[in-house]
Length: 313
Figure 1: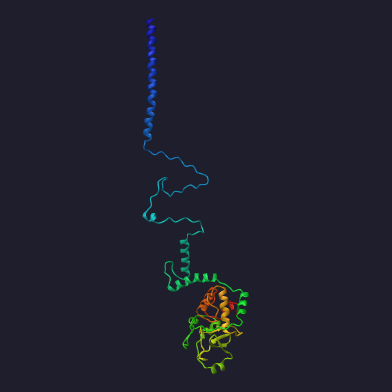
Figure 2 (figure 1 turned 180 degrees about the horizontal axis):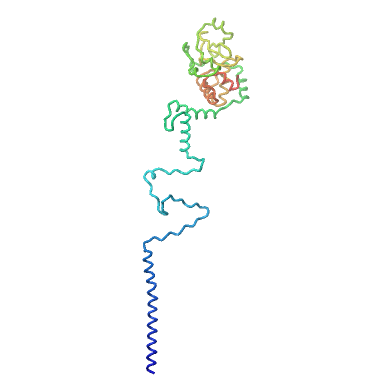
């Protein structure tokens, strides 16, 4: 009996020792696995970032080659001081690029290399082109009904001399109309060839059929133009303008035609002065502006093309 009890106690102790040994082995196993994991994956190694999910309606950000995510690429001093060029869609060049292309094309037309500077004449012509386009864009034409109305109002118009407001020009046998040598066309021949002449009454009467006192001075008519009759009457030779005045083949008095032109240019906003029938500085400035806007030769005078353009010929 004692033997049996001893055997049972011995078996119990053996089983207990075996259970304790298995429990210790289970507790040591996680520690060994943790140690092995730490050896294969150091603590300071960065874990790979999770892949970002695309969001509908948003474009994925494009990184430059070699640039790591989350780390901005260092900029040089030049790139940091200058703004980055914006990428434009095809056909939509930036303003500077477009201007540069136009400059290159202009240099090609002028026969210059891309980096060759323009000459003074080329710079003048380049500046004149936009100006010409701007003026042509402002071209105006008078209303025919207003023209007829103004002409009827001036049917009996007579100009009066105004030497205090508009000083008279003086006789100079060497005088030539400035710039007329560059006016091309037969319509401007009388301006190119004009020079004042001094003659007495007898000479004028024998050479011209019509000589009249108009606005303080004598004028003679010849083939559609009125000219100052210098010397016809030295006491009555007030002229605001020394040169031909075109009136057409009807030979209307020059002061009436000047008044008609002043009235029409006043209606169109070119002339700001008084309708006085005298071809003074303000009237000539208005004529020059109208001629420039309508692509006419800028004579600052009443010539055939200008009178035709105004509908008064």
